[in-house]
Image 1 (cartoon, rainbow, N blue to C red):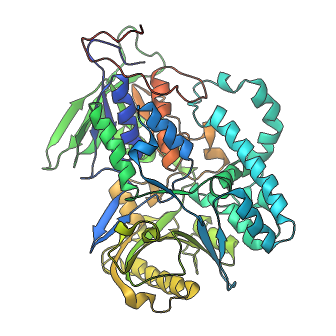
Image 2: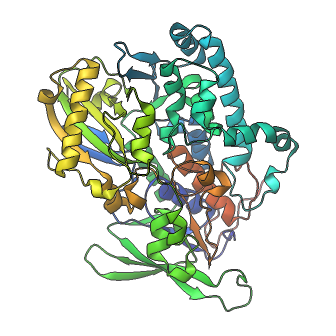
Image 3: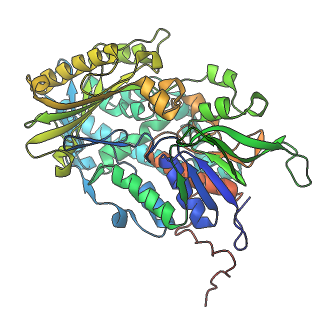
Length: 548
């Protein structure tokens, strides 16, 4: 189905104003759909949120700007550019890594040459082996961009090319071997193996669980640039909303969808494979009333588990409860936002703190009897290192992410220690750990603003499956065409986008999922990016401009 080029426009209702929902709204509006976004919360961005207190501005979700070409392409589709929409800065050093039982941290830099020197300083010969590793990562990424990421997998013809066939043996090895084993073929030093393996966490996985296909991610942080948008990631969310609104998207907030409305397929020309057609949504407005909103198509950018199991009757679920019983959730998270008095010279913009026994750490999170790791490996962001507006003068902004089991029973966070006791005790221990490892023994005494967020908050605020911070883990059976597809198998005119679906989690993947949604609507079965800029659909009743 594609939007008409003239005449009455088809109405698309999008559930959720997260990054995937906003990006989908922008693309569909520009393509000629009449778009309404319905959001359960009072603000945009979903997990990519923002919280301000005491002169501090915190990004409450994504904080790494990687794969810049994906952002660039999306903005070009919308007739603009990343440069016009965002004030991007290159981080150099890109990030710092602290290792338990090692006195000195390791800094990684912008560009391969500097990082080869770092690797060589820690292990003789590792510089050349890093170059080979990054060559493999770059080639794997090239193939992924050309054939797999921008692919709805509605047809496998796009993969039936001489280049893909030629690479099948290599791709098969990368799919079947985990990242940690693959990295160990190149470097022996435990610290270097962790540097090559940690990107699995970005995928909601572990180095021993994620296919080594994902070693392509090292191309982003060790070969390419790590960027930061001045003003925080809220500026990226605002840019998406602005582009959607400029193309006619309407937004309804404090509107929690309770059902996707459907009607039986009985008329001529309707699907023989699907028994029903989506006709709109039912939501509760901010005053508690019930509203029904008609639509020609419904797009859920909400969590796929919630969409399928809570918004559709059992007979119309493509992914019912039994499907999720055999899926692996990405980790939950404890988020700690700290306003700190004075300087923290031991921290760069991005910092990773790795415990000595990584296997035990990930085993605690993903094992048969999940528990909170002790001590945990954590990620720490200090945006005030780059962005003066992130904190008042003489203060630092510190954001901490602690991976936990995906379990809402771990509780909710709060402000100034007001969260559930267990979570706040974990936060206290992590703050002590950060201070000790980075050489700031009085860190707890210098905190002026504190907020925590836990798995129960993710479940409540984002209807997140099991309270996961990311979505389904990127293990083999949940990657590429084995991940949730972006169209219902049971309901016509019902589509999905976001981290639960192809191609996966992360800001770039959410942008790609929005483009893949448009490709699905247009019957485009290729595996390549759409030509940019996206042709703007004419206003109803107007003829399209013709060349010449």
